[in-house]
Length: 179
Image (cartoon, rainbow, N blue to C red; front, side, top):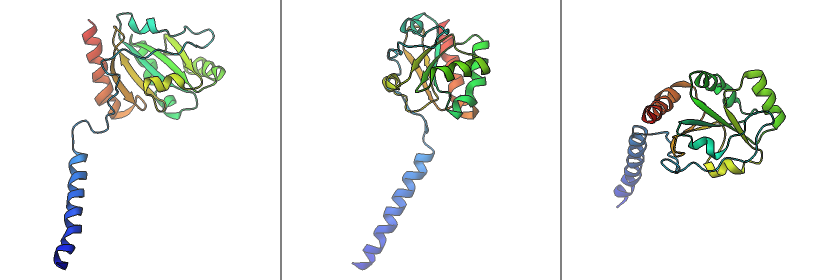
């Protein structure tokens, strides 16, 4: 009887080790599938930055793919991805911004100093609308099809191999489907 009790921890350890091993090599690891994929994009906040075109729900249903980026000036990863957003915009991609839990004056100053990649910006000073989009923390970026449905969600800064391996192909696919 005692010999069987000694085997139980080994069997449990082997089972747990197997689960971890196969979990590390499964397809789609690290992806957070949004509940909004293939559904209409949630409403955008009804506030904006003074002197900057305000993002509206209609802007997400123009027939053109739109990249919607949730950002804040106090967010270091948002600052790291900013050059990528500027490049995207200069390449002709429609990039919209939703500035969350931030001070409007700081946001305006940041866009003036670093460049504004956004064709329109909405603000969510209390972070209420970010919850409707399922955003936990900036930066998070959505690809919205021309009909206003969400095609893809990317959590984290638009930099590095994860960005290149997942976001870039998803954007290319959405843009190709638009034509």
